[in-house]
Image 1 (cartoon, rainbow, N blue to C red):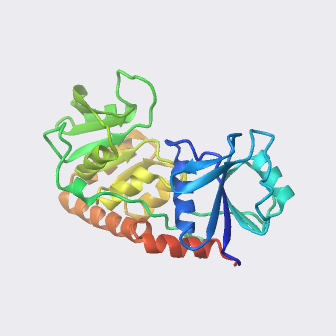
Image 2 (image 1 turned 60 degrees about the vertical axis):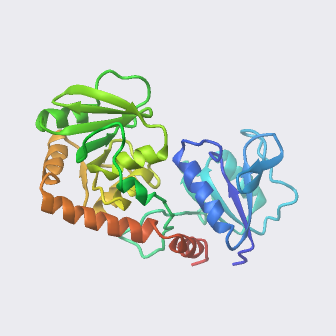
Image 3 (image 1 turned 90 degrees about the horizontal axis):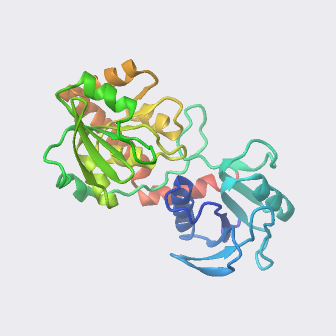
Length: 313
C-alpha cells in the first residue's frame, strides 16, 4: 500500500462533544506521523486552519463533491459512512475505504470497519487509540469534596434534573452509608442515603479525572459506543468500571478488565457490593490498569496498530 496519501472524511470533525470527533481527530493526527493526510469536512467555507490541519470543505448534505486536486489513489478513513458519503466515495473509487460507523447496507462490501476494540473471535488487528490521562490527578482529590472512595456515576443525561438517575437511587438505598457522586451536565452532585449533600462544577478534564481517579468504581450509564473514552480513562487510573449490557465498546473493556456489566438493579448492586471488598477491588484495579495501559496508553502502539489496520490483509 502506498502510505503517502490518506484522506480523512470527518462528518463530525467539528462536534467537540461527539466521541467520533475525538476518535477521527486522533486517527488523523497519528496517521500524519507517516503519511500525507488531507482532512475533508462538510460545509462551504473552503480551506482553512483547524489545529494541526488545514481542513477542506466538500459542500453540504446531498451535494458533496470530491476536491479536484486530490487523487483518488488514496486510502480514505471516514468517521460516519452515511449514504451520501458512500455515494461520493463510490464515484471517486479510492484504493481502500475504512470507517468507524456506518448506516446499514448500501455501500461497497470491500470497505471495512476500523475496529477500536479487540474481537475475541478474530485475530484481526484493532486500533489501539491513545487515550491520555494526567497521572497528577491521582495525587489530589477534587477540591469540591472532602472524601474519596465514593461510587462515581456518569449519567449521560441532558437537561436539568432534580432527581438522581434510577441507578443512583438504587445505590444510595442499598448502601446508605456510602457516598455516590453523579456527574451530569458539567456538575458533580454528592448523594448519601438518597439525600443530596452538595454540588460542585466540573469545569475541566482535570476535574473529571480527579473525580474518576479517587472513586471506588466508575459506573458509566451512557458510555460512548465506539471507544468509551471515560471508561478507558477510569481503567488507566486503576478505577474499576461497571456498564450496562449492550453498551458497545464499554462491554469489551469491562470484560477484558474484570469489570462488570448489568441489566437489572440486582446485578448492579451485586457488582457494586463486591468492589467494597478491598481484596476484590485491588485485584480488579490492577487488571483494569494493565489492560488499559497496554491497549490505550502507548502512543507507539497507536501508530503501529493503525498502520497495521490500514494495510491490506
